[in-house]
Structures are given as structure tokens and as C-alpha cells.
Length: 113
Length: 116
Image (cartoon, rainbow over all chains, first blue to last red; front, top):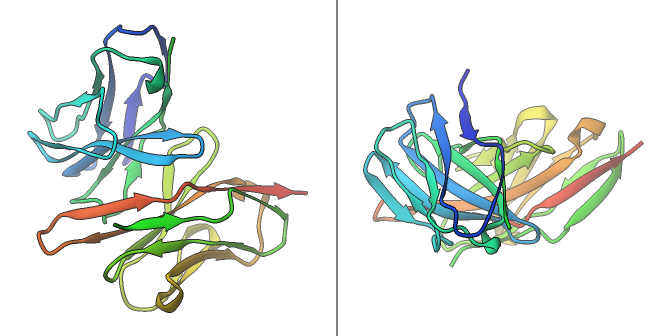
């Protein structure tokens, strides 16, 4: 089954404790991205990747890192999480770029205390 | 800069009634237009998209949308709403620049509530 998986689905952590949210897709898509969703603000892109070893900042990249060492995986790293990073995070992938159909993961609910 | 406006934050519709969700966009050229749906606890799923051609687009789950260039709108419609349609709906606009760089901007969403 074609899908995007994220782990963990729920995470409660404390300020400053490094964490990684994993994302994996099995559709051989070149384009992958991370979004955060906040009430009243909709979806905002954090980082994206056009292909292996090619990543770039989205609209709200501060406090986040990403890497794309393999085509299928695109982890999101929070080196020193802060409470303003409490949010719902989505990973998405598409065939080539943003204008292709985006396939979204189920989301990761992160709370930073 | 491109932008998307979904004027209604919440809409309540009776089951069996018709539905129209509004979307207005700002974009300098011919846009790519999308509607995504997010069911509770789920990620977003594409309902339909418009790139070119027929301005009335059919999607999944009985939804359709009409691109009206003169009004910069891409409203989503369904003739008869089912309780399972209760979800949040996102309109998005995007495009591909001459450089090959692509863009995509989501609206803030409209929450659809379905009453019995």
C-alpha cells in the first residue's frame, strides 16, 4: 500500500531535549516536505527536499533541521525544542515537486513543556 | 506573492443538503489549484485539482470544484452532504515558475460540521 509513515504519532518532551521525528515513504517520490499545523494559521512549510542530499528552507525553518540521505526517508530534527514548537507536524511526499499531488502522513502531535 | 483566502472558518450543513466552500486566491499567472480534506486525526488527502482545461473539475467522494478566473475563485461543491464529510477542508494554490521552482500555499482551512 502506498503510504507515508511518521513516528512517533504522539510525543511529550521537555525544553532542550533533542528529538527526531521520522518520516518514510514507499512511493519512490523525489519531493518530500515537513509542515506544521497550528490553529488559525493553517499549514506552514518547515523544510523541503527535492531529492537525496538536496534540502531547503520553507516558510518557518527556525529551530528545525532535516536531512535526506536516502530517497525514502526525511527525518525532522529539533536540536533544542522550545514550547513554541508545540504543534501538529505532517510529513508529505510527491512525485517531483509541490504542484504534484501531496501524500500526507498521519501526523505527529508534539508537546514541549 | 500568492495567497489563498477561505472566508469561512466554520460551516454547518444539514445532512443531505448541498454544500459550497469558498476559496479565493491571488496568483500572477495561471494557477494550479487544489482542495484537500483532513478527517479528524488524519493527514490531508487530495480531493481534486485543476491545472488547465475544463474549468469544472470532478474529484473523489462526489465533490467538484469550478475555476473562475474572473473571480479568482475555486469553490468546492457537493450536491448532498453525508455525515462522513465532516472534516476540515483546505484550498491551495501553486505554480511553476520559469526557473522550474514550484510554489504551493495553503489556505487556513474551513471546518465542516454536519448536523443530523
